[in-house]
Length: 310
Image (cartoon, rainbow, N blue to C red; front, top):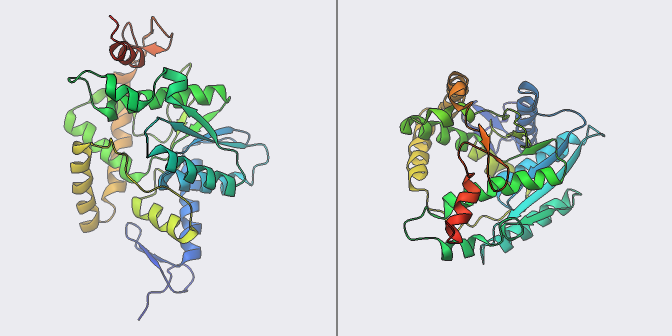
């Protein structure tokens, strides 16, 4: 006997385990969009006249982000959505992701804006990896630092009021557990929230998908046939995060709702440790003028090493 949709009684195609809902395609799409809408309202992520820069990568998370925000914001005539892709310069990988992102943006009536590492930093990620010293951090460390800077600079250039990113429930739960296991109280104080606090020089970041699971994302993209690029980055090597992901996936399977419980606990932890993160932007970088705790910001420090400067 086939499952019936918990909402309307039609044949169900998806079981949302953490809410114990059996959903047909129509109700899956509607409840997914409703969860994002509730997150936006609960945390006051958007105003009705915001200029929203949406960070997309060509992957499925940001595909859902752009699709859902486009549908939600269609009811607000004064808002504007600007899809932004940062091309790190990874040969054989980013080109295909860029194609998927453009196809998605075009289908939703948007013009895709593209900025590159080479534009902002004078070299691609591939070039950075050939220049770095053997004892230097891996590609993910470089990419994370430079990508964050590039997104912020591009969002400022585009006069964005907010920068929306495709972080989902699984990502946030993993980060919370990693920070706890590392005892990283500063990171606990400045992450794990759907909206970052406003800091001068930074476009506020929001995470509208923070209450959607990986399974929700996969189902939504599948049934709506959203175009996305599903090949992992050739530099991806976050072994520690992968270990946490496997553990949490097993816990979520055995005890549905585990990820949501971690997310809610992480919000309380973030509030408790926020004071420890308050001095993270105490000064400005001597080279670029961006906020930093030392003489040089992380971007300039890494660029100095890559260029062999002292």
